[in-house]
Length: 235
Ligand SMILES: [Zn+2]
Image (cartoon, rainbow, N blue to C red; front, side):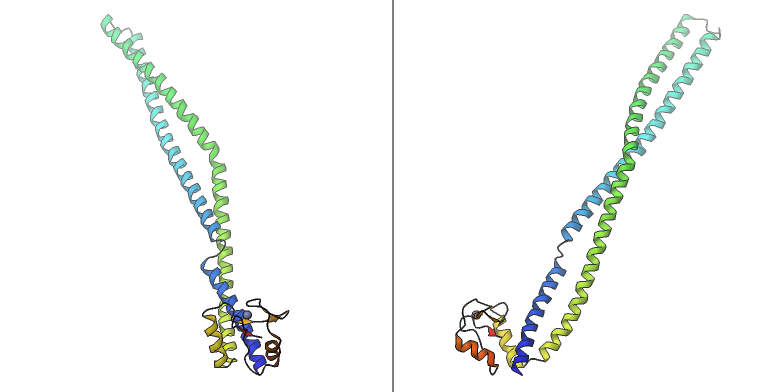
């Protein structure tokens, strides 16, 4: 009877240790740091992409405005030329004014064509590198989702095991006498693993040799026997 109780007490101890380990793992999953890093990377990539898209949008708008300015300047050059070659200009003064106007429009065209070219180059660069970056960001996002799912599955598994252990622990406790349990929890307050095995003549709790008499008594299972050195219950 005592032998069975002691054996159950040892099982209880093992199960409690497993329970604590799982609870710890639930609280602080070993891969949660990886998950955090993946999320951070994915978010950063997404932000960079958004900024890039915003820049592309701004540049396209600017380019459009410049093209309009260039078109307008060409129109005004055309108008000036028409006026000059119409034969209606009679004064040198008006001719000078028209030529000045044409010169200004030409300069404007040059200036804006140069600016537009620079914008086109930047747009070209941004648009060329964009697909690859989108691909990379999607990969990172997928990695994050995959890891998140994996951890969720593991956590669910741990929770299921914890629920099962809880029931088994209650059943085991019910099969052990209150006196023995009381002793067990009393020792547990000060020492880890209150139940120790005698292995190679030593207490597995403190690794100190057990006297022959104590070892013999423990084997008889007539009474609860404790280690003379550390006080653990010997099985
Ligand atoms: Zn001991």
